[in-house]
Image (cartoon, rainbow, N blue to C red):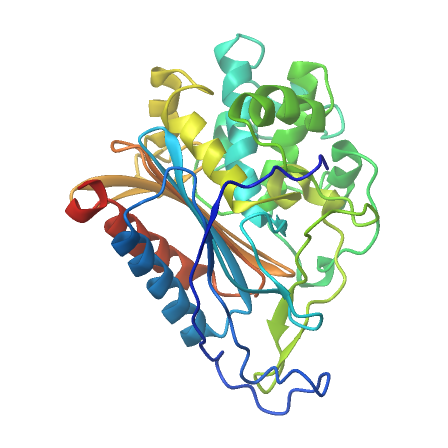
Length: 388
């Protein structure tokens, strides 16, 4: 990880909210995990009006209270620039370390759109045929009776199976993207590619191997050179559990009776392309701004990414190429949720207005509320008063 970026002048605001009560929580005498106080902080680059920023902070605090989220970092971009950075609560409950905009979280499946962009860039350069067999680029994945293509992998129609209950959490360290494929590469396809839709992280692991083969580089190098550096993402990288990462958040889940407990040990090296990156909320917004402002993809390729895909029978799916896509209130929207040990995350864009929202939290299993909250934040940011 690179050194943390220096933040601009901070705007301070204080509040105290209680987390969802949790019975029987054990912890240090000085800290009651049944009622965790959270203190909002804001750092602003091109600040929204204080009234709008305050309304966003209040919405975040309300949702955190409702779902007992210990810590959350949020960033918002619009008009081509980062407009708001804020953090609420605790990066580490046990150590009483506050979350900040520069807190580093697992991105979980928010990693997938970044993998998708890398694949689409290679396609635009003529180095990756989206409709060729995956094993043409990834020898670690053996041929199957049906052809699995990058295009189908991008839209979760590739037939690659999902997780088995016994496979998570993974605690061993995998040395490469190709090594991680050993978990599923020899298994039969779950269905004929193109005939159905089934969300699968393993499909994106295979896509990462395809990217490596097409680029002739490691997956990490492709992302750094083609996505992170052009977007100005200085705090995003594949996770390394052994590395000392400044401002890395602790992660939590709810125990059997609702108490807040530490997440179990899990190593994400087996699925870097599908959910193995770490980063900050401002970095995720930088990615989104670079995407919607066509600094990563051409207009035509971006439209492909945002176009709902169809099965071979013509059924419209809820996925484009790397993002969930839809309409709300007559406006296009696209997003990707992430959830794994330690975190729940969201990347949300309104491509026609150029608005981007990213939220990273250190509690598992609250992805759906984060999507609702992202929409509320976007509505507030696009309200008339936000541009007075």
